[in-house]
Length: 51
Image (cartoon, rainbow, N blue to C red):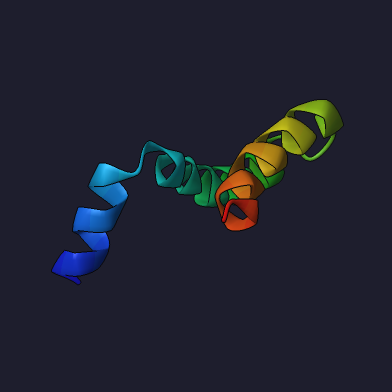
């Protein structure tokens, strides 16, 4: 667990993973805000696409 936290602290791109739960919360609170959900989803998926 400490290795994972160290990796996240040293790689700012991985900070975008915080948007994953935010997307789910926003989807429950504002289901009709399609643009907002799209932008948050893009931000959440960027770290998964990085090498």
